[in-house]
Length: 71
Image (tube, rainbow, N blue to C red):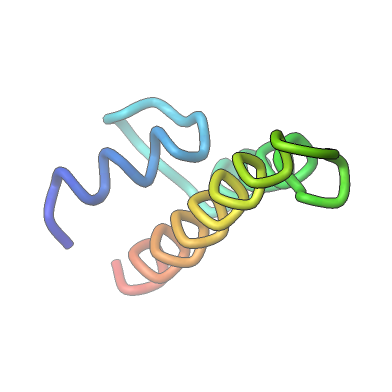
C-alpha cells in the first residue's frame, strides 16, 4: 500500500498520520467514526455528508485491517 493511501486512511479514522498502529487502535477509531457519521443519526442535507464520511470510515477500516493482518 502506498504511504499516501495509508496516511489518508489513518486520517479518515482520526488516527495519527504516522507511528505505530495496532488492530485495537483501528477498531476503536472505527467505532468512534461510525457512531459519529452513521447516516441513521443524521437528517436532511447533513445525511448526504454523513453517508460519504461513513463510507470513507468503512473503507479506511477495511484497508487498515487488511494491511495490519498482512504484516
